[in-house]
Amino acid sequence: MLLTYFVAKHKILFWLLPLRFSISHNNSSLNTKLRNPLSITPHTMSGDEASTPSATPKPSATAADSPLKLKTAVEALSSIVPSLSRLTPASLPTSPDLYPQISALLRQPNSGAGDNNLCRWLYDTFQSGVGDLQLLVLRFIPIIAGVYLSRVADRKPQAGFEAVLLAVYAHETTSRAGKPVSITIPDLTQPSVYHEGSVKTSGKGTSTPNSAATEPETAVVSPALEPHGTVRSTRRARIVSVALELFYAKIGQMPVSSKIDFCEFCKMWAGQDGEMYKKFEEGGEKTEEEEEEEGKKEEEAVGSDVAVEKRVKVEGRVPLCWELLQPVMRILGHCLLGPNNNKEVELFEKANEACRSLFSRSMHDVNPKAILPMRSLMRLSKTVMPNNDNLDPTELPFSDVISL
Image (cartoon, rainbow, N blue to C red):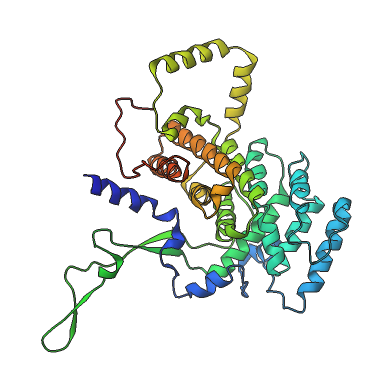
């Protein structure tokens, strides 16, 4: 029974760390994708998409054009943010002052409009085709996506944010060339991956497939993309999720502050307080006295300003469909289990808070697809927490309480 649970759990979690397995774009090279996932190839679109500037990526910049485009980007940014006028083309991609100042501007109430100069700069910078400049824009994808989705309910025009998201989406559409992203799941019934696809040699010297060998199971991580020139309500989640997928593909080169902002927006999107599951993360259960005390506090808060503030915060959540949740959980998985994350205490804590909030939201929405991965992330995070020498991650929890 324990082995069955372990196999089922890991088959559902196959997409959390897709790069651990063999990733294949149908009829495309994995090495090319991993070496330069931001490479742009010529692509011709048809229909109304081709007439929209945000859906037409530019070809890659040559090595000779890169210094000139870096200088142009610095000059354009200096006119928008005068405090960054001291930046040089060489220091632009690595400047520590760049992210906090641009992040503050992107959070302003008037940000995201069609005539916003900062959004225009981000769009032109990404369309330049220079790898360093494209990575620079990807740092702000969590803030752009977070602010954009949080303001959708206000029905205010956000053409500036949409242009940047469409530019990233068009770039990824071109890179994939209409092919889906798929992974091969190892057969967990075999002793090891080396036992898969074994062959037997007959007496005549010919090789025949082994009857015990099973065909590898292939799953689609991200379906094929269709070119879009506008953002509609039916396309919004898909376009944002593709931008987050590209952010995840280069997450190793993203600053910690960008990942922390992403975790903060995950809590905002969830709109649920996950503190009730903090005891689960710590490996303990609440006592009856603690539950009674919390119940009294909630009753006392009804009708007060605190309760009103909490209700307003919950009402600010956004719809979380499965295609949007997948890249979200992959990014959170990196924030929790990525290399050297034990040194980033704040990032680990923020990611844990985001996981608890999203798990609470999944339980509230009764979303079985999201409940098991989020619960697994919370359990896996315990393996990297201090004082976990006696932790057995395969041990099944026993409890008489059903949490709803």
